Every structure is written in structure tokens, then in C-alpha cells.
Length: 327
Image (tube, rainbow, N blue to C red; front, side, top):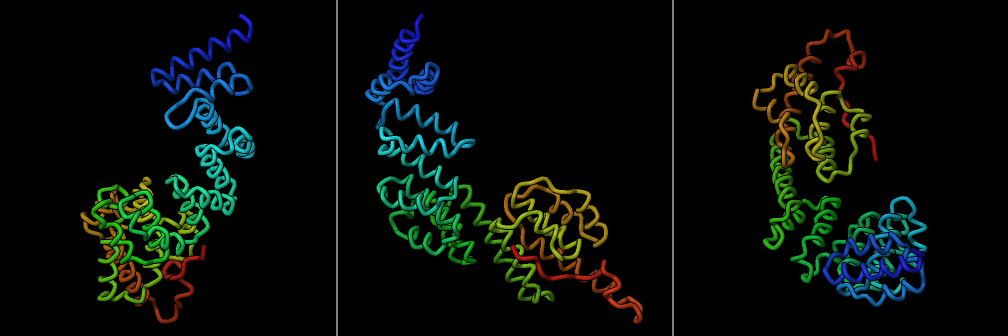
């Protein structure tokens, strides 16, 4: 069978699949016989309607998704083709490619030209978030028209957290229209624990440990890496506490050997030990704080018991450094 005949049969199968709603099979058929590179068949595929688009655009988007990860520049060139560039779905794909290539200003400009489509709004918010324009995000997402849109409000929440507007962030999670969403529920628990910690700090003998609280704040908004914690100038045991909190935030596996050491050395209760080991749905800031108190009290006693002629600087294992390296 000659190539032209195969293409005709392939086109017929595409039409049959679309009529039955089997769009993935139709896409595979387009790609199999390279119908997307033949001007004659491009015209025919463009006449086959698929919801609010057509078969050519739908198949091209599928092709672009495969090209996007490894060859974003090539995918972008396809989006700019004359017969594609005005289609809203292709424009949205172009925006995603521009964001992938870190060309945020171009992405934002296209989004602003297509504000009637929700997808462009979300990509604009993503671009603003990646460029740390949190105030602009809050300005956009504070509109009442987006109050019930949990995708938009997720950016509102994230921007508020990054600006350390904890009370405002908490209020967002309480919005009855979106409070059932998993991220909102988890953030609500995290913030409740955070406020408990703040109250505990005020009556604690460690009320001057604002640096410890600052690191936990960064863990709360997950903008701190495991490497940053490990390379910081905190004491080994403080790092263990931070890494446990980090694992809770990231849902990562914890180092049980470190937890055992912490529990044995600082006389943690069995419940505290179990609380550190188990996987948690939210960050228990109060737990970390209470364990920090035990660690610091223990180390302080050891320092007090040192002979007078031995300086603290000669016992680096007992030093408590209280500043994390900046990002």
C-alpha cells in the first residue's frame, strides 16, 4: 500500500475515533502516519471539530508535550507557526514553554492579553510567584471574584506565607468555599501549630531563640533545602530537629538512627520519640520546640559543669551556633 493510501485510511480512522470520543487513539493515528507534517492533511484535520478546538490542534498539543521537556526551543518554534499561534490552547502551551525557559516577562505579557481564560491567569500567577512578586499576587488574588477558586487562592496563600503574613494566611485557609482542599487543610494545621509555638515562645526560657523560629518558618513555606540545614552552623542536635521537621514538610523518610540518638541522649519520653518517628500530616512546631528546650537545657548544664580553666571554644561539640547561612 502506497503512503498516500495509508494516510487516507489513517484519516478515516481519526474521524471514526473522534466520533466515538476516543481522542487519544485519534492522536496516535495522527502521529503514526505523520499527518501533522502534510499540508493537505493538516487542512483536513483542522476541519474535524473536537469540543472547542479541532483535531490538528489537539494532536499538535500532544506532540508539543512530548517535545516540551527535552526540546523546549523546538516546541516554542512550533507554537509560533502561522497556522497555530492564534489558537488559545497553543498560546497557553507557549506560555508554559516560556516559563520553562525562564522568560517570565514574555509569559506574563501573553497572559495579560488573554485574561478571559482562567489558564492564563494561573500561569501569570505562577510567573509572578517564580519571580517573587508576592505583593502583586496578593493584589490579584484578593479580588472577590476569585474567592471560591482554590487554584487561585493557593497562590494567595503561598504569597502570604512568603511575606510572613501568618494571620492573613490562616484566614485564607478558613474560607468555607475552599477549606476542604488538601493544601488548605494541611496549611491550616501547620499554621495552628505555628501559633501554638509562638505562644509557647513567649513564656519559654528560650524566648530569645528567634533564629530557631525563623528556620521553622522557612520549613513551613518549604523554601529551605536539606543541604542548607546540613551545612548550617547550628549544633548537630539542632540540625537533627530541623531535618525531622523538613522530612515532615516534604513527606520524606526520616533517619531513625538520629532520632534514637536524640531520644537517648536527651531523655525524650516514649511518646515524644514516637511522635518524631511517625509520619505526620502537619508540622508539629510545638513538639520541635519542646525538644529544643530539652536539648539546650542539657547542653547548658554540661557547659556549666566544665572546669573553669576550659573555655567553651575548646569544646566545639557543645557550642550552640544560632545563625543559619543565608539562602
